[in-house]
Length: 519
Image (cartoon, rainbow, N blue to C red; front, side):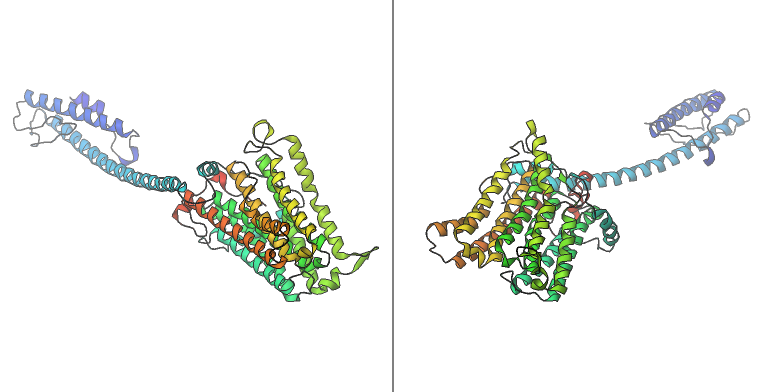
């Protein structure tokens, strides 16, 4: 027995603990108990010590009924047995403590797993309910939307410099501020300046107070800043998701129309309505082409001179006009033949933006990211241009059929057709993110269609009434479409549109975070 005790003896000091697994420790403890019980009984029988009552192990446990006898011939053996017994008791106590710690740890992990499972179940349930939420998308759209990954290439000249300012500014944004709320706040501020400009100059011919032009520059700067901060805020709060990207691009589409109208008023393009129409149509076309390229290649592409630089130029125009005046500055003749500064401004605008059309032509020549060089939705890479061309043709036809309709109310005319263009741009963005086809007809064309029908039937409605109705129908349609779209996607993802809640933290994975702004 002494030999067995020595062979199984371990150092029990705290500084020399054995590093073994829980399973190995339990097996060793069970074997030690069995060996000790068998040897103790053999020792008791040999020494006829009936006062010793050592029970055999029962499922790895043991107990001592009475102390070992004090036999003169085996006092050393009894002391070693007692020491071994104390050692086993100490090991058993430590094992019990370790088991308690493991049980507590496992309980915490189980609770965390239950929370994650509950969150996943809630998300899955919400997504399952998404197909029953009334909205513009069907189940196929929503499933593809979940698989969408944000991809971007290229950078502009000024943006790396502004990134330093934006990174420093993001630390001042409250953590409970939703990224979409930042974008919407910037859009509302820019919309307020545009509405005020249109009130002061509905025909884009009147002089504008200097304070309003300075406010327009400031409002555009605020929009640009908040639009850049929303992606960073999404990463800070863990609330990035597909809805955020769609919301951001949708606001950019609306802001493009607002800035174009504001720029036309600030430069007095109402004196040359055709140039005003060309500039506004070109602005919306550029936005459409940028997302047409994304629909073909699957990624947003930035050029050296892009939207950030264009917005800074617009701010410069507003500030310069505040000091020089709408007609005092932009009505100056700068070239022979009556070429005014406002005409040169349009020419510069068209020239600097032409590079995007060459980029589109290159992407079309190289083929798309889909099957056989198709779009991401495996559709024709040319077809989105057909949809946009249809709107351009309707716009040109209506303006040529009744020039007074456009010349007398150029801002209202552009608003009516601009609302339809914003709707088409949003549908193209949705088609890209959901990898689905772009439909030809849409309710956003009801406003322009009303003007066509009114002209065809010799104007049963006066031109002014028909134009106001077309603008109201177009604006109402794009607003309700955007609201229903956001509501449906938010319900499907289990998130809120303008607030941050517990579920928002799981709204997007790392690969879906918005790394930088896209337009």
